[in-house]
Amino acid sequence: MLAQEGRFSQSLAPADEAAAGILKLSPDQLAVLDALVRRDARINAFPDPSQPAPAPRFSQRLLTAERQSAGLTLLTDAESTKLDAAVARFESGGRSGEQLSTSGENWRPVAGGPALEVHGTVSLTVGAGRGGASFMGGAMAVSVADPAHGIALSAGYAEMHGKGPLLGGRGYCGGLPGEYPFGPGSWWLP
Image 1 (spheres, rainbow, N blue to C red):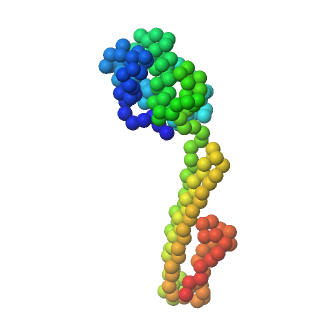
Image 2 (tube, rainbow, N blue to C red):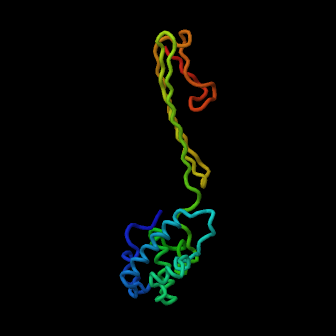
Image 3 (cartoon, rainbow, N blue to C red):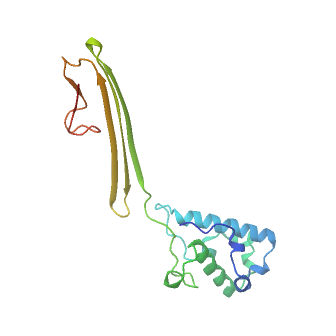
């Protein structure tokens, strides 16, 4: 789940604003802070497995120039700790308890692991034969795999229609047994 809708700076209760040092920041610094929190939530919701694990606290994940632009250098250590905890709650959609601590040491990305894999096929078959025979059909299949949980779901649909004498009066459409997407069966047309 990505961070809650809205701006981080507007999500805090007045007591939390004071404890996190938000009241020390100018409107421009608040805008920068909100943008950095949005970026952080987006990056941590879909982490890049090829990159090293991120720092546990929001303020530690920022560059020095970003901390300065957001005014975080004006905060005391206690305010910075409260701010990091508030950002972690905001990014997690308000979860609390053991999942989040005020020090940020239990911070985890909101969503992680490999993304769903979606694959599909679509085919169209059109044919004609001697004596005015014709056939037409199509097939569609989609597969969705969740590598993180080791499950997959596949669904498919195929349909063929034809008319007239085909292949000496016996209509056969489809692939060889076991051929995808038509499967082991075949369609005999009138």
